[in-house]
Amino acid sequence: MATKEMKTSTLAEMKDEFIGKVGTQERDEYEYELRMEVLGRMIKAARKERHLTQEDLGKLIGVRKAQISKLESSANSATIDTIIKVFKALKAEINFNVKLEDDFVKLA
Image (tube, rainbow, N blue to C red; front, side):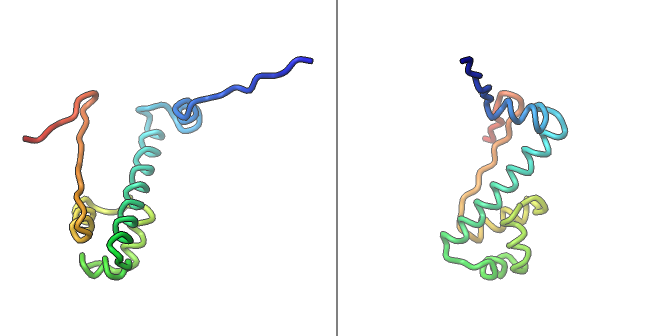
């Protein structure tokens, strides 16, 4: 009796096949959406750690609860200014890294 071997794929191979190869517009859009969702989750976690409601956080930065909810579900439509205000209100440090090909840009 012959047994069939199951083909295995890495996550990177699956992304290449089903989303698009690195550098394609589809893959760039996917990676961007994923980063924005992670950022939204980080904001939510930091807000909860500070024992703040969405309404409380909104008042701290001058926006409505609905905007905080939208931001936490996906930071996609937020400006950098808003994101910085949110983390500042949460007394959370935020770091940005800029990577040019294989080298990180460092500010003195």
